[in-house]
Length: 195
Image (cartoon, one colour):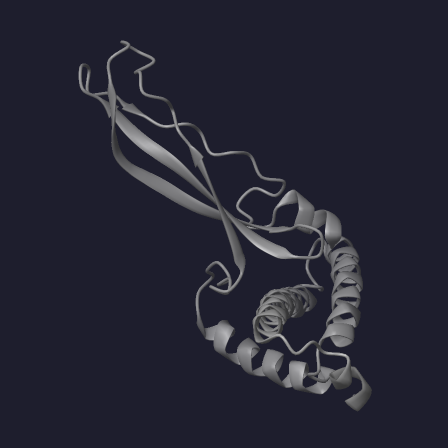
């Protein structure tokens, strides 16, 4: 450690730049770890729910799905343990406490950290009405989120579908939402491929 500190330059501006780069890299790694933790908790909840349903009509399908989810969870736990200082026991305690909290709450979408990298894509229907050719004006937008994995980095792609209305015929125009690999899911194709 002392040997490494002797190799550092004496220029304060260069040292500040090095510190800023290290802080940015640390923030990126923290966001990735947080996203992994959230995904692990989601998979644990899903496995617990499926284990409760295992004695129903289609129990063979559920058992196969449980096995697949447990494999994915195992891979994520290995990746998280390599990158995290938190032990698996602490993660189990956190998951157990969130299990009790989430069982009382109705189904809702998982919250993604505000620190996660976000990308916004706007689907604009244009400036001319397809029905009459009149000028369109912006009325609002519908925003949905897709959680995707890009080169081992979690990123939220925000898809904003702009709503416009024609001044001539008062028709509302909006492009359709892009299709998803799993309908109603936040997971993108890259994340599903990674899992």
